[in-house]
Image (cartoon, rainbow, N blue to C red; front, side, top):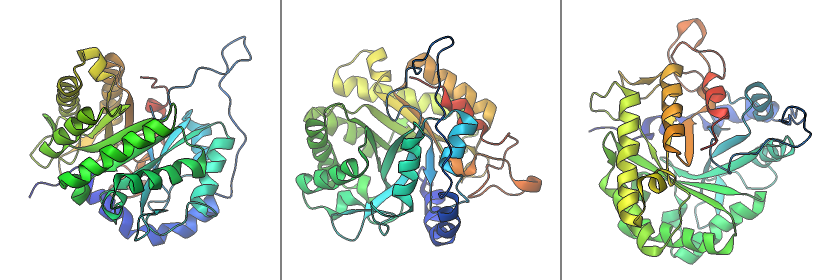
Length: 344
C-alpha cells in the first residue's frame, strides 16, 4: 500500500511526544529580544507577508525542537506553523489532544513568538490522533472549536491539516467546509489554509471533492495546500513532482471556482518535507527547495511551508535522518532561511 503524504513522520512524531516535552519546556524559557526588519534609511517596518504565507512547521512535542525566538533571530523567519491541535476526546481543542490551550508550553511559545514580532498559524489535525472534524457532531460545534483556538491567541490565520479518516469521510469533509465558512464569516480578515495529501499529478479524489465542496459552499480558502512528498510510487525528482502536483491543484481550484490561472495559483499552496522523506529514494535538498520556492514565486502561490524546522539541520556524523535532522548535506536552518523571504 502506497504511503499517504505525512503519515509516517506524523505517526513517529506522536510516538516521541512524551520524550520531547521536558526538553522543550527548558528551551521555551528563553525569550530573545525582538528583531525588527527596517527598510534602509527608514524607521518603518518592512511590509510583512500575509499571515500563514511562509510559516514552516514547528512541533514542540518531538524531535529536539529549536527555541522559536532563537530560530527567528537566526533565520529571519517571522512566521511559524505550530502543530497539532486535536480533539481532547470531545469537541474541544487541545494540543496533541492532551495539553490545554492556555497555561502550558504551547501558549508560552506562542506568546514569545508574538512578543518578538512573529506570527503563529496553529495547525489543526495532522495524521495521528483524534480529529476535531470527527469529534464535533455539527458544523456549528466544529466552528466553535476552531474559534476557541483563534480567540486563545488572537490569531490572524489557521491551518486545517485534514488527513486520514477525517479527509476520507465525505460527511466530515462537508462539516469542515461548513465550519470554516462560519469562521470566515465571523472573523474579518482571518486567513484560512486547508492542507491535504496529493499525487504527483494533483489532489486525490478526496482532495478534489474537498475543493468542490468548498466552492459550492462559497468558502473563500486563502490557500488550498498540498503536501507533495511520501508518494511511494518511485518518484525521485521531487522538484518536478512538486510542480506537477501544484499545477494539478491549480487546475482543480480554477475549475471549481471559475478563476483564471493566475487567480487559481493565488489560492494554491504547498507544504514540502525538508531532506529525506519517509519513503526510500525521496529527498528534497536545499537546492531542490530553492527551486521549489522560486517556482512558487513565479506562480504567486499563497502559501509555502515545510515539515519541519525540527529537522532543519544535518545529521551529526552523517547519521540517519529522523526527528531532529534532515539526512541531507545542509547548513543549520538552511531551509528556513530559504523560505523566510517568501512573500507570495
